[in-house]
Every structure is written in structure tokens, then in C-alpha cells.
Image 1 (cartoon, rainbow, N blue to C red):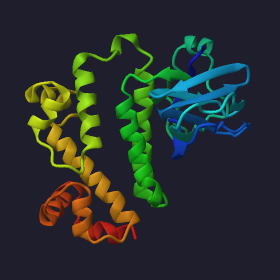
Image 2: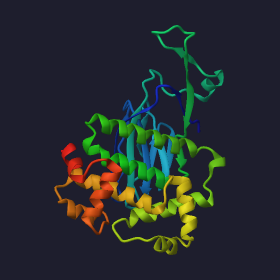
Image 3: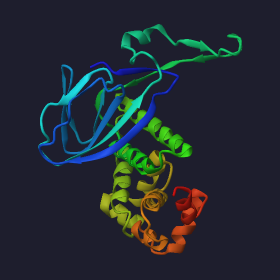
Length: 293
């Protein structure tokens, strides 16, 4: 199966995304010429999808990109409860992604119109994305997609739209990296992903490094080393950031008092929640809520 190849610049850009949960029997609807790329990432269960003559079984941890110029449709109903993310994106290039043969000619050069060609050139390059693949780091992809979901309610704000684009570029990196066999998950990557997954699942509870180590059967020092390598922070820093991220969603989408939100995301004291929020976001929880009201 040929990859989808994009000439950059410009970068593919994020349009919209969401999360669907469906019951057994659900079948992906038939659509044709939707004019945008449709990325599907399954988190639970399995989707059965066709695109033109191809058939895909998309299981948990798999990603599939449906082309904007093709007909796609469900080939069978789900056999179990299934949850998946969808994301629409597009590129400003007039043509569809290049075929692999088009990438052999080297980099294209496009000079800036207002300046002499000798002043500087913008060299294009190619980004190859698999149309269908099992993700190397599915938990990282889920985290990015959850972040996009949190921003959806305030997507009309310019700053939020820029944040969405940054998260989308991170997702593209995860998809591209999944094509390279030499980047297959090491033990440290697996440890870091397991730790991150545990922290996200239990963020409302009181968690210590010792508890994390017991749950994963790794020494806490080793877990910290792995998470610093993969995520650039310690387990407790990751937990704090995730809790603050969840609190931002509650601040935007509910009228809960600050003290209740603190408890909902795992803080024992509202004052510690407020000081942690201020440190990470630069504003208080109340100011954040007013900004996005």
C-alpha cells in the first residue's frame, strides 16, 4: 500500500475533530468526495471500512486516513462497543498528495515573490504518512487527540486555533514515526506509555511514585527516567499537567465552583490547585474561565 506523500510547505492543516462511541451493529456511513482527509484512530473495539477497492479492519491502536477524492463506506457492523477519534485535515496544494514516484526528483525550490531569487529560497520537502498503520505510541496519540477535544469548545478564538495546529503537527509526527521500523518501541518507551496511561486513568485519585511503581512493576526511579526521556517531565509533573488540562475543560464547560473543580481533578486543597494553575497557565482559574466565557 503506497503512503500518502505531502509536499511541504505548506503544512497540512487541522480543520476539526471529535470522539465517537458506538454500540455493536454500528456501521460507518458511506460518503464520497468529501474534499478533506479523514483520519480515524480507534481507541476501543474495531471499525470495518472500505475505500474504493480496499478493505480495512481498524482495531484499537490503529490509524486510517481516508482520501478526500475517494468513496469510503462501512463494510460491516461493529461486533462490540467501539470508540474512535475522527479528524479532518487538508493541504493548500491544488493537487492531491504526490505519488512515491514524484518524490524521486528531489526538492522543489520556490523563491519569495517580493525578493530576488538569489536572496533566499524556500526548499520544499516531503512528509510520508501511512494510510493505514498500527501506531507505535497509541497513548501519546490519544493524549494529543484528547487535547484537541478539550479545545473544541473555544475553537473560535485565534490563540486556541493556533494551539490546535500545534497539536495536529505533533499527531502527524507520531503517524510518520510509526512507519520507521528502527523506531519500534523500546522497553523505556513502553514503560513511559504505561505510566502515562495509568496516570491519566487514575488522575482523580491520590497517587504516589511508590504506588505507580507497584502498579507497573517497575522501580519508581526507572519510571521517572523513562518518562523524562519520552515526555520531558517526571511522573508527578505529568500528572500535574494532566490534572490542570482536565480542570481547563471543566472551567470552560461547567459552572462548577473552583473548589469543586479542584476536587474533581484530584487536588485535595483548592488553594494548591489555584497556585498550580497560576504557575502553569499564567492566570488564575477564575481569570481563565472569564477569558473563555
